[in-house]
Image (cartoon, rainbow, N blue to C red):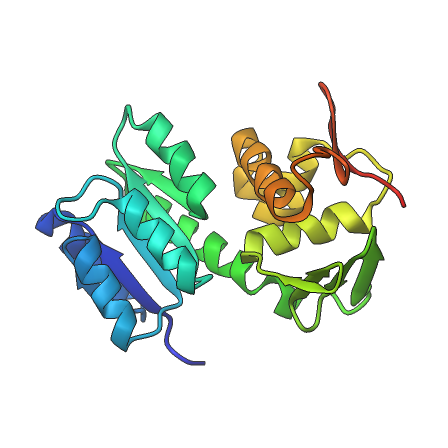
Length: 232
């Protein structure tokens, strides 16, 4: 198997080295950067399978770095936050981050989050062969094998999590899925209490697929229960 290539971005040298050493000893190939500008420069010359990115950095912070990475790449991004940065964490999710770790964190938590994010990014490649390979609803065509989504014939770029969430909502069209059910299917059993993830990513799908003049025309919020993809 090819090596997993990870970019670790943090202005705190001890933390960068802690992450780098613990990943390299487990077979990951690691690059490091001390701020967002260095991270973007690394993207000019390398491709990565995962980015681990601190929010609070000089020169270019993690939020702007996330935004710029998402302009050119769907690479999974795990952000590092300090206690009390709740608003910034939510903003990072809105910009396209995939997961977060709150400092301080241990090796086991770090590795568990990395495995989960990488598993989700490869979800369409590992999906059970019994699942439908193509779904079509409301002019939206989802191609599981090609990992492509079109709406009205126009390509829609989705991150791996957005793609997986849309797939499961469309697969169960007309059925209300609870946040915990969606967390189990899309994020995995480690995330059954992270209800905020579902809300944020449903919002991503709405912005990308629904008309601003007709909110909830595809994905309905059933208050107190969950979310439903509306039948044609």
